[in-house]
Figure 1 (cartoon, rainbow, N blue to C red):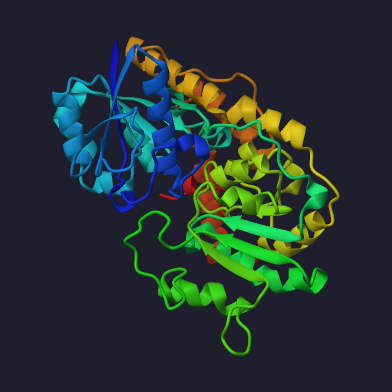
Figure 2: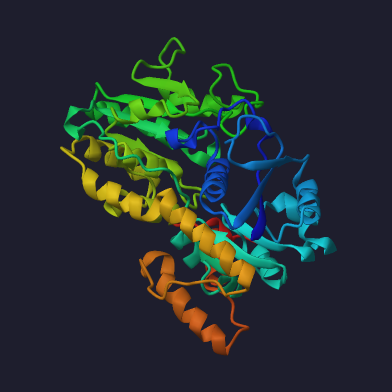
Length: 437
């Protein structure tokens, strides 16, 4: 029997009904959704796993999960030790490091698994690598893991995609859909939705009858957040978001509708949508749940070409590398006559279904329990993406010369040098957040 604990901070989501995850995301953040799915799947299917979910609130959670209420992550760790847990899974945040969370000696009684829903800096990776009780760093995507494959922390790292329940119900034919575009996600600057509202007038110039659905809110991650005048997002960001969408009277133009936070009912909107857009700017995106959900409902998906969407978008030709291409990409996809639904569904089933993802988590917990090293796929996929081929060469060289820095180290300082020299680099960006110290 393997005793393990998972932890989520859900006190701001206690009013959301999360009791039936088979219906889809009830309108919560991807981290919380992924954690509940894995905890529920392991609790229902594995008799040799004794799982406790440590939470801030026990309201509206799946009944199959054994929960233990705590005030914060520190209390959760103490309770986990006292409960006799062997493994503890948590999403590490910078705030935890500031509070010296992992410096506590009692943590040596646990085998810590860090669930990397975010990119980690080189400094954090080196710190985790030095801690003997951190047994695994679980990335949510292959590209996220490969981004630091030449760092020593790679050897205690692996990746497991986020999962969801995949339905075999038929979706509306693509040719029967209106010229609708839909965004799903939080209404925050980091989610890039303002790039979409800025591009929308250009889309209307080509498709005057097109409609834009924006599903989400500034309250996606916490229902206790205060919003601006329109009740859409935080006040200053709301003004930036709505500026391109207001008419001369200060009202939102008819072609745009803000739906707020929706649960499974958003499927009806997606099944009338031709083009789905998750996080147009892609900042910090390690996976992209909404890209998977949109494709399952038959949408063509476009967004920026980054780590998360290289894993989750079936047709990578639909991705753009420059945010200025967003409007032209939407117009191009609105002119499409169909999608490749059967192959998309098969791709999602093989990679992201809970049957696949849950088994990988089960294997990981067994490996941590028995002390086996992390498993790595020997095949280098998308080797030309973000200098992955060079990272692999550097990884092999560091086996002989471990003092060599990572490729990310050189990228970071080259970028800063270009910045200081005022070199024009409007298309140049740090590949992912882990390049920052």
